[in-house]
Amino acid sequence: MFDFSYDPDRNLMRLVQEDYWSLADFRAFESEFMKRHTSIRRTSPNYRVLADCRHFPVQSAEISEAFGAFFDMIMAENKGHYAIVVGSILNKLQAKRALPQAHVQVFTDPDEAMIWLFEDGSLPA
Image 1 (cartoon, rainbow, N blue to C red):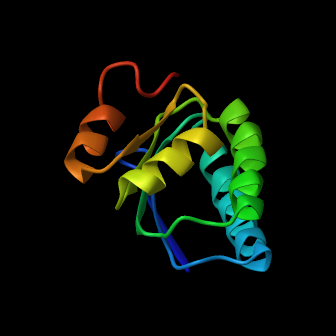
Image 2 (tube, rainbow, N blue to C red; image 1 turned 135 degrees about the vertical axis):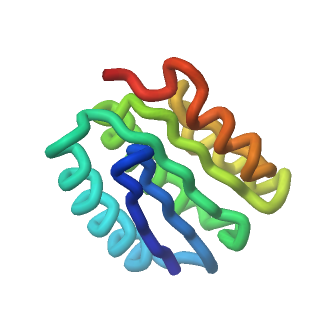
């Protein structure tokens, strides 16, 4: 379903999201993300995120709405760039619609996502 890692030297949280989720799956993800978010923010108020969602199919409207509400909260606290890598144009459209925050971008190419994550100004102090 999902997996997290964090590289403190690059101030980069990586996550992998896979499969079709129920609301219970989303709530488990949300809980784990919040634990890691809180832990990282003890030493760094802002951090970068690379979400590999290439094997995360288009989700239900319920899950899309849950992500939208969650991102409103998280992105109000973390001003670092958040890159989402998807496997299809349809996934890209869903992610962009659900997550309109300025410092969230959706990519189909992981290399482009990494370049954007580390460009000047990508990590406010």
